Image (cartoon, rainbow, N blue to C red; front, side, top):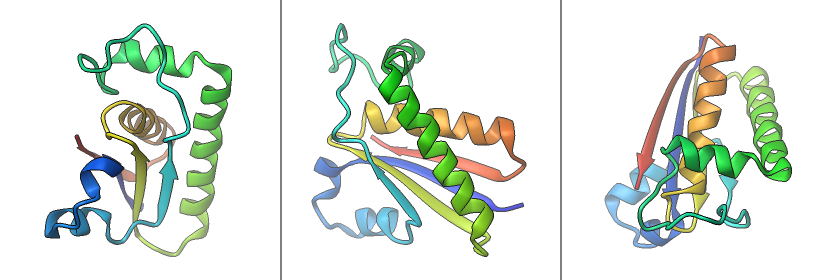
Length: 126
């Protein structure tokens, strides 16, 4: 059983190279940039985040984004199964680190928890 750490963050907050941000970002094995994905319409983004199920459902109701989620999951599984590393760090990044990266990391976490026996943890740097 491997240890998988999933993190989500925003590039805006991590631009300042503090000791904390360096520690968060170091040792990433896989990084998925979600900046190009648009947030679903109909939400006041100041009042929602990627932890909210209605936001997630709306985001992943888009067939292209849902396909991206499943392709990402398959890439992660392939990496996990092929690497000899016992500790794996996977990062999801978007502009502010509150919406898309959080939603993706939450869904990937759920998929890994349901379909594998790896010890998986998730951290959001909102």
